[in-house]
Image (cartoon, rainbow, N blue to C red; front, side, top):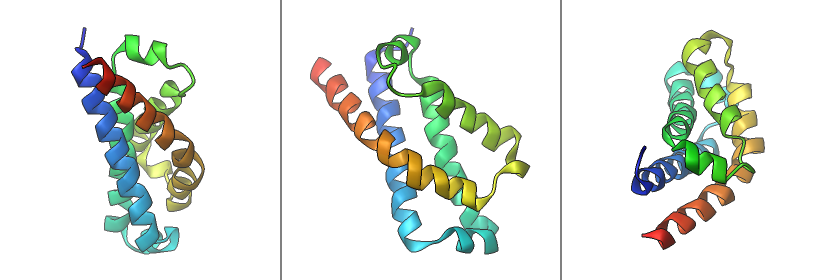
Length: 118
């Protein structure tokens, strides 16, 4: 079983990746990423980090927070890693624009909860 501190650290990794994606999307567009694979895969890596950090959260933590679609987030990482050839910049931008604004406040709240336990 992973200790609580690990959950908090993973949540911080998720929040940092979210912020990197949002900040990056202000500097680059999906069209920029379509033209430059290095830019594109920089965005992809940040989404992968969110999925990997989610995978590393304890089962207990995930079960205690069912309002977050942990399995969907984790599965997105699998698609990015194993089905990399199916991902387009526009799909990544949909995640940035549609999913991250909902996920970010949840992650912030979870970090606060975990901090209060220490």
